[in-house]
Length: 202
Image (cartoon, rainbow, N blue to C red; front, top):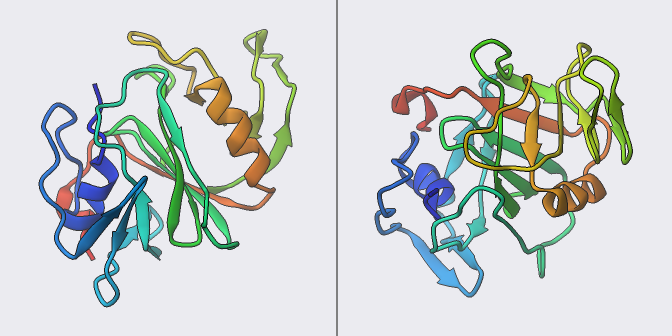
């Protein structure tokens, strides 16, 4: 099970949270239906792998634990703005932001030790709603290519015990929504599976 407000706790306190532990209360924030909004003057920032920072105004309110295959998506009332994606391998989650507001989150699959998922910040190089891997002879629906050697975000059967060959697998319905809102060049930040909490504080 994955903590429902894991990103909110990370945003508020820095570092990865124990997925089995309930998140602590969030200071300087208010819950408004499906959204946790940070109060004016207390907007936190997230540090990306390349050292850049992103300010966060709100995250999705997901109080219940998320399981393999689960996702949340709600962009109601979120203003237009640049889309960016943050993948946290330690939390095994992906978060999609429009401007400073999280609009989607999901539990993911990622690469094994033999074929690890690379970390860093990558632009989306290519989009293809229908794609088949020639290397692994496998379907990769709603493919968003991140690297020249084929690492991508794509629809996958996200289930316990499964892994990828370095790609980021997301639930199919989530993959379709993500595919619809991103464009080539949008950044995807992938944080490593093990991080020093002090590195995420700003």
